[in-house]
Length: 523
Image (cartoon, rainbow, N blue to C red; front, side, top):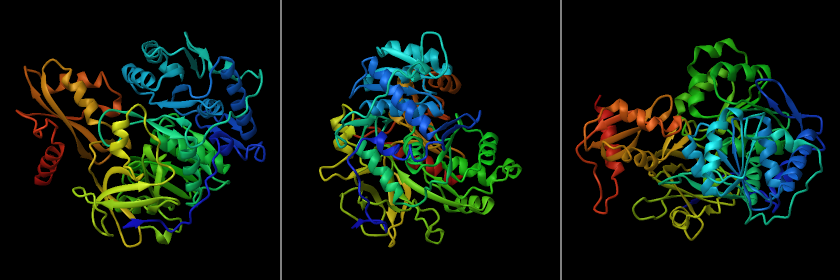
């Protein structure tokens, strides 16, 4: 059966993202739109609107035009929003990049996306410069100052104002984040203006954002959750957004206390800390009304513990980079929450559960793969028609690769993953990428990577390795760590004589995962 949520469908305008998001800028002119948490530096809605138009004009003067790509490699800061929306104003495309990536990972994304310019911070300039050279990036802009880069501030010199270029909302891309999808290496997720506008309207229909909210933006803006759900939805609503460059529990709590944060978007490892860390008792959060947890499943017991300790509502959501991202959310009235559930389908969203073997639709209560269909579903993967076809079927259903079930009230529960992706603190870790790094090691003959459950991170990567000549665990772990971002590092290593594979040579990852679970249960 096809499931829909209790919310009425919403109207989705076919419009460019930036004027849609900034539609209240003149009305809320003097209100703080963005505050830099560590310094208290604030940008009003009027200042933000002006800065976007000025930066867009100066980019256009450099010849940047519709359809071209800019990479942003930066921790959270107010200028991130200016760079993103200045690009969007010109019909350009932003590819957001994790600032913890190695220069090889940065170069791969820039090259694959075809980026013309790169915006970064001084702390990233060394690897950014190296990556930009490898990817033939034309110019680097920097928030602040760094040798070999153009100050981003130069784009804020008022030489004129650009207006929104004409776009085809359903076809023209505005964001190109990278995701591994259900399998394989990271791929560019083609998100249109219509995709993001649709998801913002869908979230509006979920009734938990308000103009008088103060949001904390600790989730990274290179991640679709932070970029769309916190930044763009927050601006659309007319809220004030406090940015933090990174998560650290004490500074996170102090920022929430100092700025009277009312709505916090976080991930399960942070919920765990809020429920159990003793430092929470040192802070008072009387204004905190709602915590919204996403990016990975949140258990019922942890939900209750956090709500009881902080005296606020904890809502859970579900989605993917490929769905812009929200497809499900806990309902607004607290009495309708079901602990452990990712909620009900968002407005304008259809969902179904299918049998993993036959593809047939299943009724309520039966477990299978979760599939979704709606206006927030991506246009496809960049330059990857085969991967797109594997993920979105001819009827428009996106196959999430997650295993779950829906109850009789259309509340969805995610119980496992059919796809190979490892979720470390909400971040994607593609096994295929780590396997490629392992196989480049001169002592390794074969390798497979699987998820290992972890109380704090959710899952961590474990490598199963066949040696062709003698080596030790630590040297292999160090070898991988030097080549990947910190969240992708292998935490455990096991040596075996043979990796189980299908007749076609594909790693039987499920066999390895089941064996790992059996070992854990036997302890």
